[in-house]
Length: 161
Image (cartoon, rainbow, N blue to C red; front, side):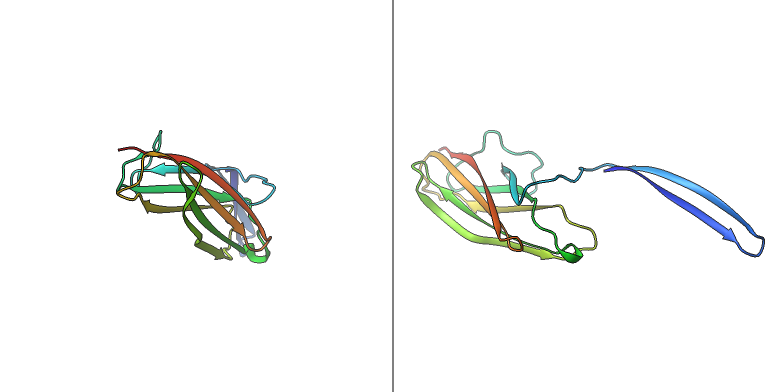
């Protein structure tokens, strides 16, 4: 985000003349953040894959599909803007017991021309048709494979009949 300008200069070498023009424009977006390390943030639940608004409260019925999205930021960028990040997830029941875990749900690594400051992650899970009502916890764990660091964020959702 910010104000930018393009300075155009055209020269006619035969006539020994030139013309200049300055084009100013504004780019809307988020300013880069300085984070201490890899961070998982904004874990939100949705009813459908393309929903624009998160559920509040996040409540599902047995047999429903849970959709979750989040951001990962603060990971290391190396030469050529290279990054290497993976994330996994775990679901805990009302009593804190582990119900489901996928240590590596997705991996993203690239060397884009422009630095990629954050990644958007997401997944879906089907709530078991015989899932007991209660409050459940979803934990997303991200790993910066270049810096060998990790972070996690948890969010709660409910299952109601």
